[in-house]
Image 1 (cartoon, rainbow, N blue to C red):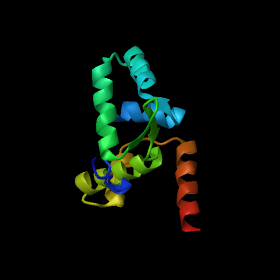
Image 2 (image 1 turned 90 degrees about the vertical axis):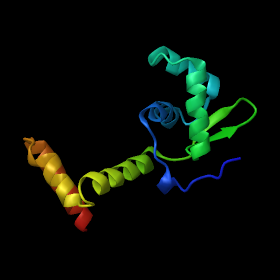
Image 3 (image 1 turned 120 degrees about the horizontal axis):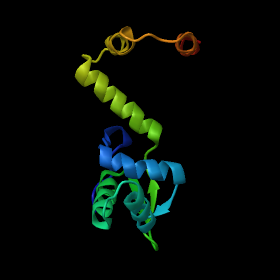
Image 4 (image 1 turned 120 degrees about the vertical axis):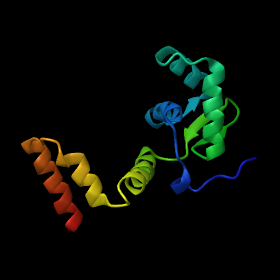
Length: 127
């Protein structure tokens, strides 16, 4: 049995995120149902889907419950977003949030609504 990783270490790839999106939306699904849904929407064969499910279990992103091979997310979407954002900022922006923001929104024309939303986020963060 593999050792479960700390959530802060779990990195997910695109294929794994397809499975996780289903689980985040549904909370719990049988592996066979995940396979059917993925087959319909993405076209993966059953073996491919089960390979991804096994990887996610090994990483500690999914827990398996028997009987029924029920799968539950063991990491939240928010946690994954935080991990991936931190890695992105560290690797591509010299670990500087300011560099990230400058590059990301510096060349975009933001709407008035988006500017107010950013201003509110900044204000809420200062309180």
